[in-house]
Length: 111
Image (cartoon, rainbow, N blue to C red):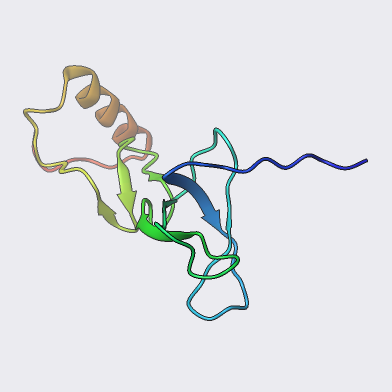
């Protein structure tokens, strides 16, 4: 039993790089309706028989990592959003953070 394969005719494709043996190229697996960390752009004309797209942007370099305590996106030890803006935090956010700190038995310096 064969599985039918459809061609993707789009200018922008989101997929996951899986590697290749060719120099300066990458094989990308595109899963429909699933967002992965690489954004591809269709080339105006093919570079070779198999090269049809170029890597336009790495959306999430280390994956989409969410800090479990704050619920904010981070890359390694650096937060992607500014956490020092206390005016942007709602009351629900501050109570959630203080509850998490109490669970971890960590006290904050400002009270």
